[in-house]
Amino acid sequence: MAYLVYYEGNLISWKSKKQRSVARSSTKAEYRALAHATAELLWIQNLLSELHHLISSPPIIYCDNLSAVKFSGNPIHHSRMKHLALDYQFVRELVQSFALRVLHIPKAHQLADSLTKPLPITQFQRL
Image (cartoon, rainbow, N blue to C red; front, side):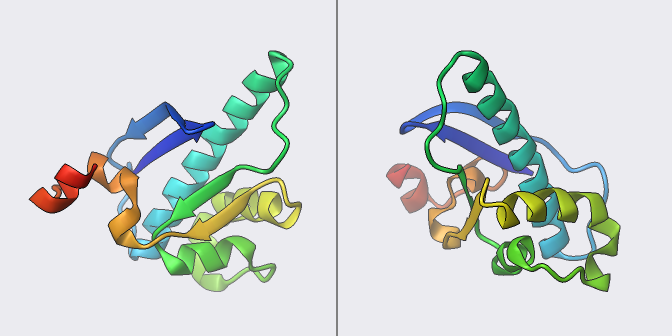
């Protein structure tokens, strides 16, 4: 699990750690990471509001797993996601209330992968 948090184009927070549990699919693993990144974003939003700096538009999370992106906005609870019920509800409610946007990004442009995976030399040089 890894995420990078940018604010006004500047990297302000990042995290990379091994997930505690084994996921049976990449969608479940990505959705767990999505929930952790969402919690970090909410914490940063609360901190900024305490500093009297309100964010005018909802934060965007970029995820390279298309299934996780689709699950985040889907109002129907799937039995395949029952192991992630809390994470699923947490993220989905924010997306449904327009307090958060989850968008797909191609794997080649996913910057958080640089914290968890070895990079080919061309991608390393690009970053």
